[in-house]
Amino acid sequence: MDFRNAWHRDTDEEVCCIACGDTVARSNAREYDKYGDRWNRDDKSFEYLCKPCYREYCHFGRTGLEDRLEAAGAGTVRRDVFLRRYHDLADETEQTRADGR
Image (cartoon, rainbow, N blue to C red):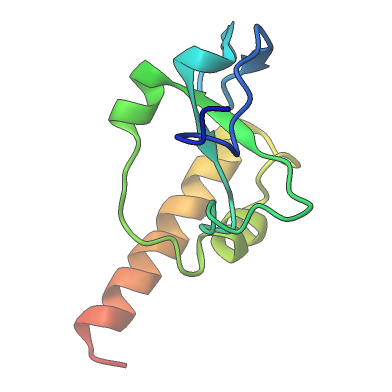
């Protein structure tokens, strides 16, 4: 048995990219864990990004991201409303950091 990637089973499974919506082979995607802990694999299911979207993905820390997404209404309000709310929340967070709070 090859143990190089024992946790990953090579399959022809197709997955959907959460960024662009394209369906791609699992081998052409990267795992995304919204909790930022992709190494703790017990009882987890992952979402996926296609390789092009993964390369464009911001790899900065995500502390508080899920809370901001929910506060902005992700998935529950129109896109323009969500983007405006998220932008305002991101500005508030940046201002708080700049003020040293």
